[in-house]
Image 1: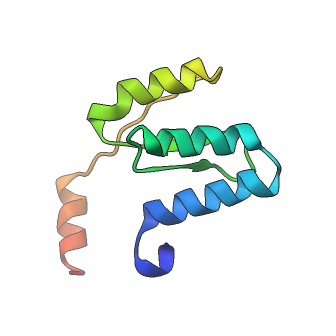
Image 2: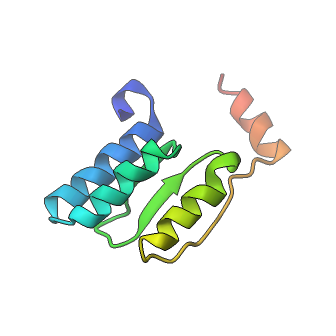
Length: 93
């Protein structure tokens, strides 16, 4: 996961470990189902109860519907990258 350079795999592994450690079977089910439905990553945040799901835009609506059907609220956000951030990152490549 993180040691292999995959931030999203690390997020899923850590988030699902938190769900398993706290006995939150419903969160574990939601995370696994989200990944099966197209999420890049899904996991419990911190010590819960929030679940973060990262996906491509084309999967956002269907994943949001799935989460709502599971009885949870959806708060949507998007990644952005400014030109300045791109230039800063490219200096380190």
